[in-house]
Amino acid sequence: MNEIYVTVPGRLVADPEARNTKNGVPFAAFRVASTARRVNRSTGEFEDAGTSFVSVTAFRSLGANVAHSLHKGDPVVVHGRMRVNQWMRQDDTLATSVEIDAYSVGHDLSYGTTTFAKVSRAQVDRTDRLSDEAVQAAHARASGEELDAETDPYVVEDEEAFEPAEAALTNA
Image (cartoon, rainbow, N blue to C red; front, side):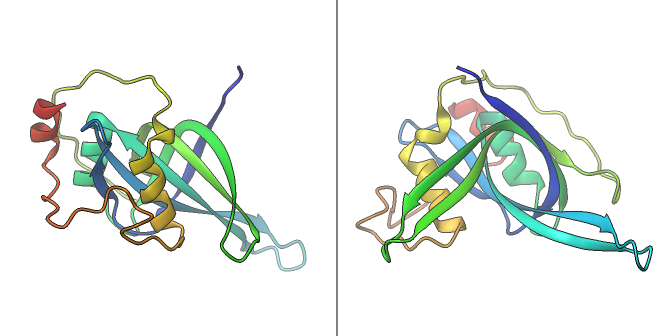
């Protein structure tokens, strides 16, 4: 089967949401807004040409590092495997979302500088991680789909704070 790999520059719409899959694998879910720029031929000026929103999931050490390092509004570059999902909303309209299973994420250095801090690396999981129910629930919340305790199987009353990257790696 062929897979589509993409690289998307953009800005984080909100802080990454740090969670764990039902098997205890840490991940971060976030959305990126990517706005194309085009030259207006009549004015010669650059203009926004539309914004695309992409849901991104980063697993294990990448997810822990994303949750620890990135914040709402940060310019980022995301590279990973793309998947397009479609579903029926409650009002019987068809909804579509684009998801990326991230293999690398970083600040877009076209807009500023950053400082790198090395952490130990966890084993990479190559299964279809985007199909995990906790991942789907996180993306549904991020894209505005209404969830409650009955439709979100991972709602917990006493959520623990997400551990920094080093602690998450020792638990993986």
